[in-house]
Image 1 (cartoon, helix red, strand yellow):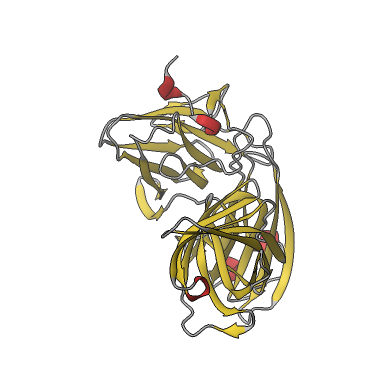
Image 2 (tube, rainbow, N blue to C red; image 1 turned 60 degrees about the horizontal axis):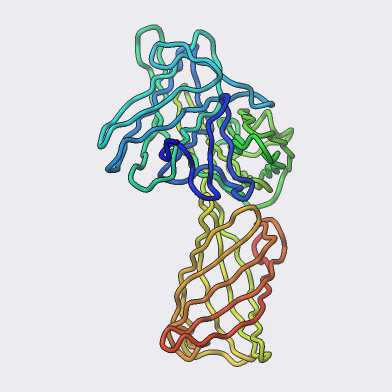
Length: 373
């Protein structure tokens, strides 16, 4: 058995029959620095897409570029490097330190999503890359634009200047052949004063791809404003603008969610503060500040950097702090919520504080109430 061709531990991925499967315990499917996702690939009618990749590792990188399109996530077969492909995938091999390009073209205008999925999770090869759209009129190049890989996200905002110029592409990158989840997405439209103007649902089956102008999504319009995308299953996205014949992109950035925080120790001591979280793939980042202990203000509350992960609704935060709430001692603080969604109004769970100097612990529960819309 070639151990390099199999995902390890509970992240096992097998490339079989043109589909990619993952352990049901792993909700997000793009492992950062090993996989790449692009929510919008366009070919035909003067459009071509070039994906440029490099291997920053000490061992050769091997994977598959998987291409899907449509509401049902059907296999998509554009031409790659001048050769027709089948079953919506093409193998990709990148030597140590090498850079390669994949040029996608087609006879008619089509679009879909693409994901480069590594054959292993061994930490001796890593992929970095980007995508460039080229627009030609005959043989003349009229426009080009570079795009970063898409990051899976559960909540994201895209501010824009001109509503009528914006197109949004979304894709569900759940590649599992067993247990793959359909994403229930909500797209909200806000005007430049922050007022919600409209809200539209979107269902994305596994591997499904949707690309539409905002004017095709909403029956109302604004001038300047923003859209907010929320989903119960992490999705990838790309926003494009078309102004005076010029193509550009808008980043789909993860949105922070702010909470008031109450931490109750097992001896009923109460710590009150604030917490802000956002997700980048399965990584969760944020801030925490405790400013009261049993209702008494702390003299020197500090801002603590929070790190963690969110996988299949299970939120784990594990980070270091040195806080007056813990007598200014070095503390490793762990917090968990087994059913977390960024769209929920509240979150709750357990926490454990381990003191570095003597390995003693304190335990308790926490509740967080969302303060941002």
